[in-house]
Image (cartoon, rainbow, N blue to C red; front, side, top):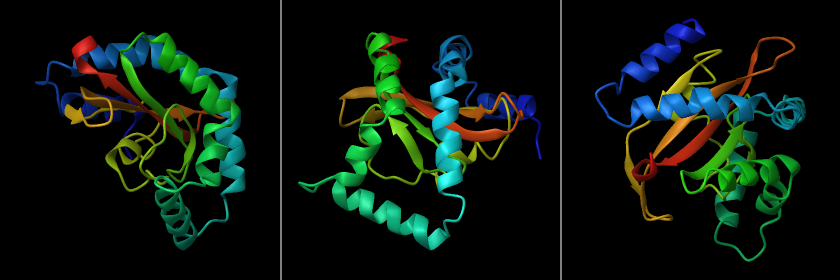
Length: 186
């Protein structure tokens, strides 16, 4: 397994030729690190990790299917529960405080399931995506900056910055965060 510093370096250098990588990595180190060190983030992830410890992959797939079905439904109890939690309120405040730079923020647990988010995501399980695999699975200190894409919902050019989240008590990776960045605002 790669050390956090090595994983971070490899993740960042994979797109080193891209002009958005350096400023996004700076934002990760100057701002997002402070967000993920907050007790509200750590405690929410630890609680969900304990709650979901016994889930099988079939259970995770079912939760993801339920979430996806609710994104277009009139009744959204699962989505409303996540959007209504204290972590989501905290993430909305962080997004709003970034004055247009941040387009979305969401936190995932040790299974890649959403714990809190500023905006509704299209799916509940991120564990099959690079944003979780290249951070949570890479260990402490991992940072992954993805390619720039047009985000249809916000009509902005966006890249996602993802980082592993560490339990300060144990030093173990307990989850990950993804922050959508409006690259035109960098």
